[in-house]
Length: 240
Image 1 (cartoon, one colour):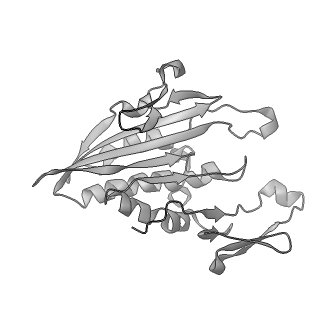
Image 2 (image 1 turned 60 degrees about the vertical axis):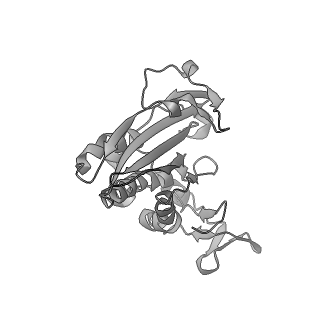
Image 3 (image 1 turned 180 degrees about the horizontal axis):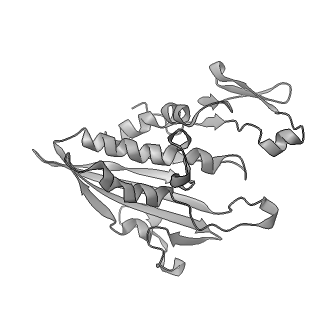
């Protein structure tokens, strides 16, 4: 894996129907081959990847995430963080909508990543995997465990462990399944639905109906070689 701490990809959102109706025009020009965007007449910015408004969800995933999942299975930590102003397309790109309402072409990073993780597991019959997952909603500085909605937000706190790692307590709870080469793919569906279903979000009237919450999903996959020794794998973070 190339040792680059942070890589930045910019995805330019296309105009929405109501913006076209009001004759809005794009203010950003995309130079895909040079990985640059031009703002206004001459303000040019260069990034690791620049994706135009015509870029498909699949292309976004292959460009930005596919290699991270491969590195994840080599023992590296991986984080995908969507950042942008309200209405810029973060939720659509990550894939935080109700997956039942989407076509496969519309699947964002999250369902595609989970599917790839499961596929990688199936391709390694010499290993037995245990998968732990957590999914947290952050709203008004309060935490909610979306995999256990009965847990009060007051019961979740951010703490530092003995190794200096910081995280909320929900990450320490086991919500795991054991996976080996004979595990039916259908057994993964509940986890995928938990991560990609519609979430209880809060709205602000000035925000035109866009959610003001943030979501943090994490997969932890320690694996065991069934024919030799134990070897832990890394953490896979999903942040929205």
